Structure formats: C-alpha cells, structure tokens
Image (cartoon, rainbow over all chains, first blue to last red; front, side):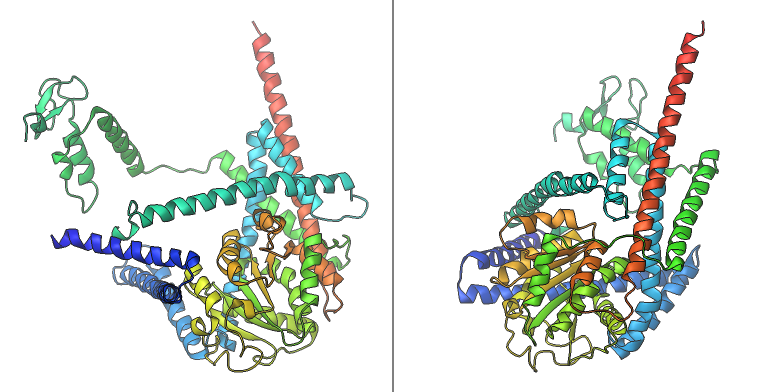
Amino acid sequence: MTQRRFPIFLLILAVAGGGIVLMGYWVDLPALVAVRNVLLRWAATLTGVAVLLGILNLLTVHWLKIIQPREGGVYSLVMLIAFVITFLVVAVDTPTGSWSVWIFRYIQLPVETSLLAILAVLLVVAVARLVVRRPDSFTLLFIGTAILFLVAATYLPGFDIPVVRSLRDWIVQVPVVAGARGLLLGIGLGVVATGLRILLGADRPYER
Amino acid sequence: MSDEDDQVTCAECGFENPLEAERCQNCGADLPAAFAENLLAQVPGQEPFINKARITPAQQVHLRLLGEMLAVEGQALLLGISPRRAGYTTLRIGTSLVLFLVLLFSLLANKPVFTHPSLTSEALEARQLVYALTPGAPVLFVVDYQPGFSGEMTRLGQGVLAHILAQRAYPVFLSTHPTGPAQAEVFITDLGINTGIAYLTPDQYLNLGYLPGGPSGLLSFSQAPQQVMPLTADGNSAWQDPPLQTIQSLSDFSLVLVMTEDPDTARTWIEQAGPQLQGKPLMLLLSAQAEPSLRPYLESGSGQVQGMVSGVSGGVAYQDSAVFTLQSDTSGITWSAYSLGLWVGAILLLLAGLYGVFRLVREQENELSRGDKP
C-alpha cells in the first residue's frame, strides 16, 4: 500500500509545482509569485546539488576501476589526480583566481580547442569521402552549397562575385530562416505537449 | 486463471502448449516464454518474469528479432585494416597537412590578402546599442560558450567588449557554464593585453560567476539577481557598490548581451530572460553555426533580439567599424588565415566532387562496355 501511495504523492507534488510556476506567468498574485520564486530557487539549488552528485558518482566509478585493477585503470588514476588537484586549486584560489585561470588557460582551453580543430579536418575528410563514394544528385547539391557558403564567407580581391554573395544571403535569409522558424515552432509545440503530459500526470519521469 | 491463461501458442504450428513448456510439444520449436527467459538470463539482474506474461504472435516475432539483434551485438567483429581504410588514413593525414601548412604559411607571410567584411544591418543595430550606453551603465555580459570555441568567440566578442569599455559602461559577467567564470577572466585579460589597459575588478568590471539551474536558474536570476547571485566569483559581495546598488531585476541593466555558440542556450536566454527585460535591449554575439537558427528572433520584429553580431566575419567587421583601436591588432592576419582555410576547404571539396563524378562516369562506361559484349 505504501508503495502505491508514494508515486501518487510524487504526482501531486509535480503537478502542484508545475501548476504554480505556470500560473505565475498569467496570474499576478503576489503570494503566487512569491511561491513560484521560491520553487525556482529550489530548482536552481537542486541542480547544483545534482552536479555534485554527478561528480561523486564519476569519482566512485573511477575509484572502483582503480581498486579492482582492469584495463584502462591508469586513466582513472590520472583522472582522479587531476580532479583532486583542480578541486583544491579552485577551492582555495576561487574560480577566478590566478591559479584557477592558469589551469583553464593552459590546460583545458588548448585541449578543447585542439579537439575542435581536429573536428574541422574530419568534417572536410568526411564530406570528401561522401562525395567520392556516393556522388548522387543530393550529394552534389550538398557539396555545391557547402562550397558556396565557404567561398561567400570570405572576401578575396578579384573573386568577390556579387551574385554569389547575393545567393548566399538569399539562402540564409529565406529558406534557412523558414526552416529555422519551423524548427522553433516544432520545439515550442513539443515543449507545450511535454509540459502538459507532465502536468496531467500522463508522463511521470520522476518515477523512473 | 483460465485454461487459456495457462497455455502458450506455438508461433510455428499453432499448437497449444502448457505455460511451463520450453519447446512445442507438437513441432519442437522454441516457445516464446522459454526463449524470452533464455534471453533475459543473459542480462544480469533480470528475473524471468516473462514466463507469467501472455505473448501474442506479433510480440513473439518482435522478441525473436530482439534476440537475434542481441546475439549479433555479443559477437566480436574482426576488424582488419582494409585497403580502403588505409586510403582513408592517408586522406585524413593529407588533408590535415594541407590545411595546417596553408594556415602556417598565411600566418608567417604576415600579409593580409583578404578584404575585411563590412557590417551587416543587425551588427549596425548592435553597434548603436553600445553607442547608446552612458558612463557607468551596467551591462550584463553573458559568457556562455564551450572553451573549444574560444578561437571564434574571442575574435567575435573582443571588439564589442572593447567598445563597451570604451563607452565607460560597466560589464557584469555571468555564465550558465561551469567554465564560464574562468573564460570571462581570460577574455577580459586578453583584451587588456590588446588594448594596453589592465582592467580591474571591481572598478571596471564584475564577475558574478556560475549560475546553476538551467532555465529555472535563469528565470530566477532575471527576477531577483541580488538574491540568486549575492556574491561574485571570488566570494565578495556583489551588489553593495554603485553602479549595481540599484539593480533589483534584469530590466535594471542597460543592456543584456549573450555570447554563445549554442542555439539552445541563446533560445533559453531569449525565452526566459526576455520577458523580464521590459523593453531593455537583448543583444546576441553568436558563433556562425548558431546564427541561422536564431535569426527568426531578430527578424520577427517583436524586439526580442535587438542586435546581433555573428561569426569571425562579424567580429572583424565590428572591430573595424568602432572608434577605438587595439594595440596589437592582428585581425588582418588572422582574418586572412581564416579565409584562406575556408578557400582551401572549398577547393578540397571541389576536387573530391570532381573525382567522384569522374569515377561515376568511368564506372558507367565500364558497365556499358560489358553490356555490349556478347
């Protein structure tokens, strides 16, 4: 019996919380707005706690990999050492202190930037492979558009063809914007549908 | 439980078997319950509850398909380096080398070749918004991009931030990314190196740090910034001194500026924070990849977004158009390297396309010649 009551309690809690936040947009009652603000601040705090739990879980997984030696365990050790050092530095020096910024500037920034630079090369290679292996009409259309955009994004003296730039601008401002609007409307409708399903209790992600 | 509930139908011959039977008593085929039990037995921690379920013939087929998929997943695939794979590696290394050497040559040659882009209409509007800032006007500057995009975003945002500081406005940094506070520090420190001015906190700017909570946190901050983010990133009190003393909500900022590469982040700011602005301008500094998805907000005419600068080209154009100058202005060289990289990428794609078409034509000719032979 207790097992059945608990989900109903959760359902009431979720529907009431969602309903209050939603009503806060339409009904200008000071008490309602105050409750909504409290709920929103709780949500922000809980998200911060969730991040901490995620970190704790990550550390546990890597710790288990170290104490139960298996392949790749050395990477877990490196990860844990890096975490402890970074955590201590940021905790003592604050997130914007000179040591914290040093770690960010000289370790994290180059690593992430390099990964993204590799992605640029891989994208060129992937598109080149696609067009070599499957040169159908759609692939050629894609390649043509990609070349148009790459060339029209720059201004090489002597190669600045107004028609190319106008075509690029037209594509960006008409079909692309139309597609983007469609996507945004779709996202909006999806959010409304998901919100309604949760408010009506049809979808209960908190029970999982 | 009825007799029917105690029986299971064989998918092969339709014979009714007892529920506990593993094989059909008529034709000997595997029965779904036994099949499912065997399947689930392979998954650790799963109990064979499936024996108590009634399974329709369609479900039996699905279950069989699932079993086959799982069986294939469990098999180790032998991966050898095929000639195609070796060719792919060569292509990858070759492309990397070409792009790297071209960029290196462009940077070492130190000669700007490509003409700088001109300001777009939306960037002109953005520039007007910054020109309208009065000395001491608080500007919420949101640094919400992944560190990997720093190359593009720094080039994009430096001119705008330099312009804000040249107007003697007061930028207040905030981020919904955990790396954002450090990112903002690097951003303004690098700008200081370029302008030859050491920008100091809290005299010339403030870093509020990381705002957790996603859309909820953002909405909460928009309504009560002082309560949600009472301290700066370095742990000091944030709102005690002018010009932030009077700020009670997001609409008390003179300008809100969101710098991001992620369309979803920008959308969250527009939708959650936008209604709280009450007419105050929201401006976007966007990576080129995010611009098309967010252009509808600018062009809708609803005033949700009042200015936009996007991509490296937008940043270079903005920097050229502003009244201030950067001491170590390398935008001409980096712009040329960037443009040359794009051109080389386009040429590589064009060559690949021509090769693909040539191969296709040759294959079709071969097929035709084979068809002509008796």
